[in-house]
Length: 186
Image 1 (cartoon, rainbow, N blue to C red):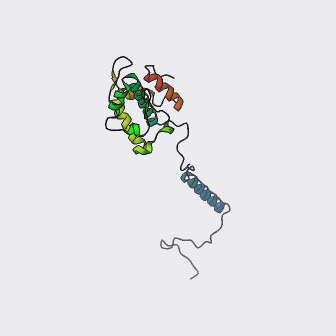
Image 2: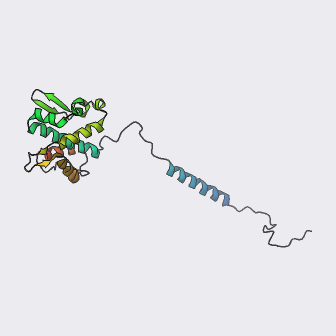
Image 3: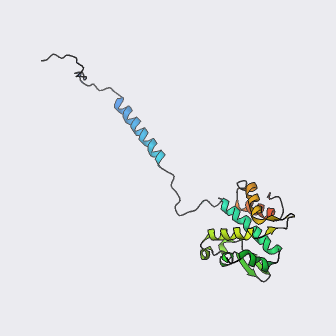
């Protein structure tokens, strides 16, 4: 009985297990390293919850809105203001209700200071943007030579300049120049 024979059914040797120096430490180090790597990969940067994008961020919708505001302002001042303001808004008074078009002693003007806007009275910026699209589509831009649709002017500006400037001020200067028949280069 004390004698052992090797058979296929008994794959384990009767040799005692010997401890090899360095293996547990290497295994532990590898496991900890993998764990640290996985933890680092799954951890995300802390987000600034409740805060918007950085102050120098310029969104495409902001640029498009600015182009429409400048075109609308020029449309109102270029033609007969009372008549245009009524045509522009039609049955939608969102631009008046939000304080974007204001009646002045000389007719109407566009309010560019967004802090003065009351967008909550018209269901937010999406309503304002929709009304601006309608307003810039109502008439052709005629002050730069050949008549062109207001929306076409917006699209042309966006195609040429979106993503080329890096600040609100640069876009504002570019848009003002472009709408005043310049090349839009600040």
